Structure formats: structure tokens, C-alpha cells
Length: 362
Image 1 (cartoon, one colour):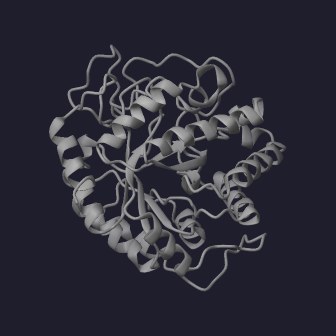
Image 2: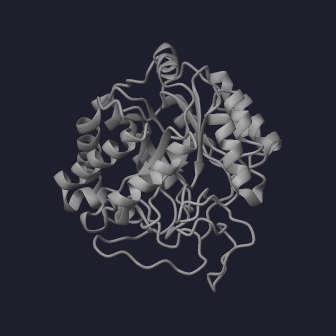
């Protein structure tokens, strides 16, 4: 299956523009809403400054389970690769969790999260943790994970909770326990800069089937009310009901955009009306003209957090494009994502020079 390409053309912005802030409460409200005020959100932004970094998965892990399970939790690689990020001025990583790793080993999982945070903090890097995700493979199991399929983007990445939530209604009880346990454990941890509650809800043809879980995870988040902001990023104008809910309920506004500078600037302008800090939690796809050289300067100028997809090429295969597999696994003519080769050499030195000119400038 293919990940839906994020096309924020001017003609599609009407969907986001329709999501104007209102005084109306969500019709599905079931728990006391504990959304931050604008003043709280802006105070958070002032404290944290300009966030810039990557969606981070160590190059030795094909998916979230391989990242977090005890047998494959690779602190040496995490430390080495976050060191490379530090050297180019990155200060924030977006990292996906998975409830199965917690279910198998609750205390061990949380201890590994603490170890990850210790390593990241050593490198001056804060963390955005992602709770749920609707992208890529719909089923999964604990234990040894599959080998990458040659030349296939994210061949082993897994959704959370995926198809299982639609097959077993009792899973919601476990997901609530998981979410609240993680949030309660880390609710005052200053090394965590925000909680991204649900990545691309409704993607991969789930559409409205994902709305109940999206609503629930915000309710659970409000019940815990961590000191860090809660958010879920808008990612497509094709799901306006999701956009309305996400924009009305997020403490800070996050979004994804993989298009060129004109379209990206238009999205920023359309989201400014909410009066809250903005963080782009996914961008940079070279084939789509979403580049460090033409997008990152806009994000810095606009004081929008800049979290690109990918740091080091590895088992996730995200140097290959979503919809352009290379079955023999040969080198793509143009890397789609990623900054570094596995040995730490830049894919393009000029890109790294651009990044450093923006992140390390006095």
C-alpha cells in the first residue's frame, strides 16, 4: 500500500480554512477538556525556542518494535547517530513508540524509554514521542521482526494499533492503560518537549474508523494532563472532520507537508489564525521539492519547528520513495529522505552545510 502523498495545493486549502477556531465544543466530547490556553502554549514556545530535528529511528531498526524491544534496543547506535545530529545543530527528535513493546514488558519498556531520554539529553536533544500511528503495515507481532524488503520504503513499519482495534473491541482497555501509564510516568519529564498522540489518523483508508481512537487518546491525555503539550498533526485536506478535531483540541498546532516552498508557506499562513505555536513534524522529500535548502529557511524565518523525516539511512529503507520501489535494492538515483549514510558521511555535504548555517548561526 502507498502512503498518501500530502498535496497542500492552494485549491485544497479551503479544507483547512474551513477549520476556523470556534467557541463550539466537539460534539463527541466525553471527558472534561483540559486544553492549554493560548498563553500557556506561547509560554511553552518561548521556553523551548526553535525546534529543529528529525523523525528518528535508529538505522539498525526496521520498525518501532525493533527499536524498543529488549533484544534489539541498540543504545550504541542511538548514541552514535544522535551525536551526528548534535554536530549539525539538531535539538529535537520525533520518536515512535508501540504498545506491544510495552504490553510484553511494561517496566522494561519504560526503562528503555528512560535510557533513550538519557542518551538524547546528553546530546542536547529533546524528544517528541508518538503514541499511535495509522501508517504502513496493519498487523504485527512481538519478537523477531522481518528483514527489509529490498528497495521498498518502510517495508517493515507497523501501525499502532492497526487492524486489531477493528477486530477486537476489548483492545481499547489495554490501549487506555498503556497511554495513561506512559503519560503518567513521564508527565513532568523536561526532556520530552511534546506528546504527538496520533500520527496521521485516518491514513491507509481507515478514514473515519480512526476517529473514535483519536477522540479517546485526547480524553486520556486530558485526564493525565502532563506538563508537556498534547497534539496530533493535520496532514491532509481530504479529511476535514479530522482536521477540525485535531486543530480544536491540540495544545500546539502540528502538521505535515512534503511539498515545495509556495505550498508550504500557504499552509503556514492558513494555520497562523489559531494563534498557537506551529511545529512541522514531517517534511523533506527531495523528489517533491521539499528540501533543506528551500523549506528549512522558511521554517526558521517563521519560527515554525522543523522536524524532517529521517536521519540515517538504514533498515527502514526510507531513502527510497513511497511509491517507487527498486526491487533489486540498488541505490536510488535521488534519496527521498535521510541526511547521513550509515557510516556518518552526509548524503549531500551542501545540505549539511545549509542545515548548520541555520542551526549553529549565532
